[in-house]
Length: 513
Image 1 (cartoon, rainbow, N blue to C red):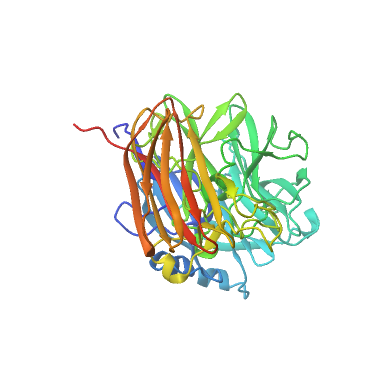
Image 2 (image 1 turned 90 degrees about the horizontal axis):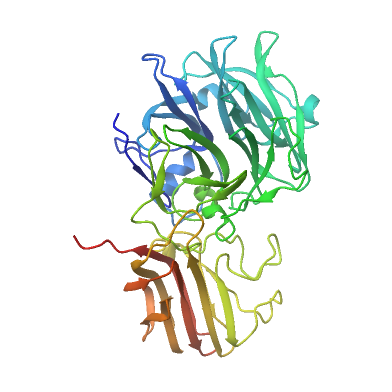
């Protein structure tokens, strides 16, 4: 295979290389030898929920439940072009246990002693273990185990499987089944001739965490997790250790991963990681779950990003579009990358300001400056609401549940801005950019503008009339210099005038050839 950079695009639904929808949520990717050729490939396992089809076909309606359809398996040699292998664990096989309930959160390990592949997956209130002779199945139920004796609850909170390449050993990484305020590591192996968990080590106790997963980089183990926000996105947290069983530091005090703050890890929950060990470098890929079918927070179920490192400190690169060379391990930012953080306004869970978790009075990634009008505060009687919940008809035009809201009960003057700068690992290159957004607005505005300002020069798009339907606006040829630009919206309006804004994007223009 010729080494080449191949594109990974987030914020869209993904397809296999022959154009079929990819349905894989709450799973993991593992390298196994192809049973026919002996050549190692990436095998991606995850759950196909019935509602994933429905939401993909009509993302204007958030789905109320998660109905298990199958565990799917896809294979690839480059992490970009995927081939559907099979529905490797079927609903019929799971139903042989006589219980419906939740099925999800899974991973696969190769069990050398039995020459079997073992899938560990949550099923209702237990952990189901299914086995197969080949990585692409079919998997049949081996046994179900209760976690009661190990941790005090029969179920795990969340879980993934991690395989240590240095030893070949695999581990279940999971949280306490009630409250999720403790995280454990258990080695997967054989006990009394059956695949089972061999031990249990508690590696964290503190704030409740879910989306538990792990990666290893340059000899250190990184245990990662998210807030317990249900289907919604959150910060990506981590602890570091020299041994898989710990101690992890800082002890019981998970750190927020740098780079994920402004958009809750690009509107994801920690899912799993893939180490691309190329000929020139090793790249750790953060594979986030966006539970859009159940959270309504945009498009695409799978959002992947390259991590960078400052020593042992990881950095999350929030990218809309990037390129990966799986042979060399190298990556770069794609030409069509959108540099705006939380431009869809989907990162925030609630109406903002919010008095429930997370308590906040700002839109993530954006700064609201009130010049005239009511101040932003937790006082729901006077404070303006900073986001708008899109209707079903809105969502047929602007996907996702939320938009920016510029309004007040009294006459107001306000600016909403975001400063975009080069990070240590992603450069905002000098050149011309296009700033675009979708909006709809009432009458009653003396001033309503979108702007981009860089190197002392400001480019403006003035909205001069009422727009009762969503309208796309754009400013082209914005000259960015010095790796910095401020973008935003300025509004002066009468009481109850409103403007809703969605899908703000800043993309570099391609040079004329």
